Structures are given as structure tokens and as C-alpha cells.
Length: 141
Image (tube, helix red, strand yellow):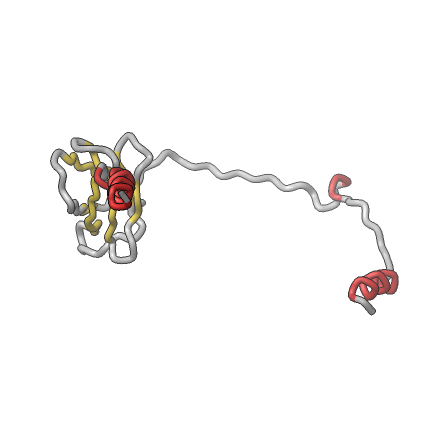
């Protein structure tokens, strides 16, 4: 009877592990073949994803069954998408650098005059002797 309960609990707790697809691989620069640290790999259309480590390697576990798309993004590089149609364990990405073209950016600022009446703040003054007494009482002296 005790083996029945033990096997029952093992089966119940191992079901979420069985339904997962685990993919690992590396993300590298297309020109220099250097690893890209901090690149994001995600399953398209879900919130599941991961980032690469200091060697450009990643491991992603997902509950989504193939077919699905993996997206790989890194700042300054063109994003890459791969369609995963079979259960595979390794997917490597090689990203190429791209230029980021934007419209003109205008930065403007203004400054108030130094002697503006809006900058005057009320202030109070107190003597340091008056502050020492409560502090010493709090410390136990």
C-alpha cells in the first residue's frame, strides 16, 4: 500500500515535467563569432523567455508544443526568428549587426532665473546644543 502512494505521488508530480519542451543553444555575432551576452530568446506570442549567459548560452523550457517560433533579439542587431517544427534540443542563433535609423531627435530645455521668487524656500534654524540633549537621552547617556 505504501508503494502505491509513493508511485502515485511520483506520477502526479512528474506530469508537468513531461509536458515541457527544453531547448538550449548559443547566440553569437555573425561577423566575429563572439558570444552575445544578455540576448533575449522568447517563444513568440507567449511570455516565456530567457537571456543568454556570459558565454552566449541559453536554456529555455516551454510548455508550448511544436510548431512554434523562437525570437532572438539583441540591441544593435537584427532580430531573428526560427520556426521550430519538431522537438529539438539545440537551436543556435547567429545575429548580424544592423543600423538603427530614427527620425530627428530634438532636445530642448529651459531654466528659471536664479533670483526668481519661486525658488525661495522657507527655512528654520535651530541650535546644535538643543539637538544634542535628546540624542544623548536616546542613546542612554
